[in-house]
Length: 257
Image (cartoon, rainbow, N blue to C red; front, side):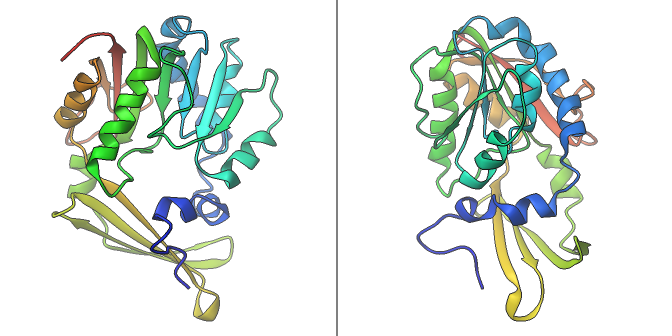
């Protein structure tokens, strides 16, 4: 059975229970470490907007809960109902606000937030690259003047040079087969994930567009955000295009490219 249909894009069906089962290492301990680093960067900007911090594509709320402990208002947004149900089940005081929405059309007024964060390559999913431009434009729109945006994507240079085409593993007692390829025409890394075997097998897909640092900086600039720092991981290490696992950019709103 193919979980993707012509009517539903891959990200509409993939971010559910199977996704959570495949990545058990993305736990609360990891989120606490990452969110602490992020708040150290975004905390000084959060008060510039009444809404505080927006966690864009918040998933199960792992990071939003940690960010909210600092006393700053936090709102998490995600398209997946399954992940938002998990987020609402978390015990947190104060609890972050949670909203289901498409990141291309955020349901918030201009200048609502002092800071926006987008974790774990939750960008580049759409078939049309113009939609990625719309996402960055929406982030710029909801940021208050002088606010900041922290984006976190994989380091494309390193991922492409080390891409593993086939992988087999067992997750929660179930066989999982993963195939990866890079499509130079679309500039997307495509991943096919088959969980289970025989008639019970379920197949899912990921298609994520590759962006290099200079391309992302240009997108930020077009949305009147200026990149002021680049990190290679959540330990604060400087970005190295050959070795860094991540590309984490801090950009400040209100300045044209």
